[in-house]
Image 1: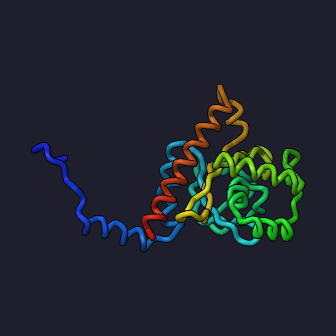
Image 2: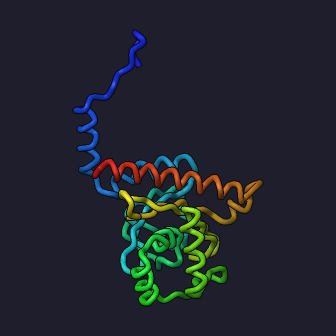
Image 3: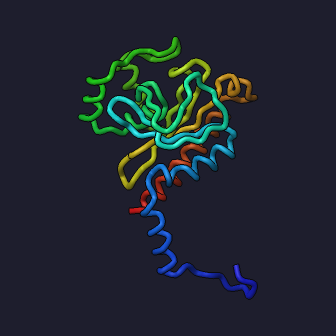
Length: 202
């Protein structure tokens, strides 16, 4: 804002420079600052992942504290069906691709709280697709919860982002469901920011 009361308008050249900068960034580079901001805001670890075969592969990660027995770094892989980001990605696959995934993956419960059948997974994927985000409650590892949302490049979902949570901490909140809903809003908003950057990148 100028002191003479007039505002600056971005020129076409300045806007082009901004788009040129974005176009040179990879998906992990675009996601990282948004994940860092969300991690700082919530005080929790945040991640981004893509679907590779029957697994998800982490492409970006901001760690606030270690809450899993297995350390997660860029490149870490988990079965897609057993993760919040994986379920987001699976829920947006074309029917033929989802059918191929189910034929290739071994769906089995990894914890006593986890689903272990294809019909149960398909029902969850329908819910995730409809609400636009996924809550995973101690199905990958006991004590671990996560909330994930899709990242779009134009009309296509190309990645997912999530927030990792300690179940004990969530359950200690005055209203755990309200807290999880608020986290879901935050991760969806972050996913939209990354999606906007991807779209601007062209």
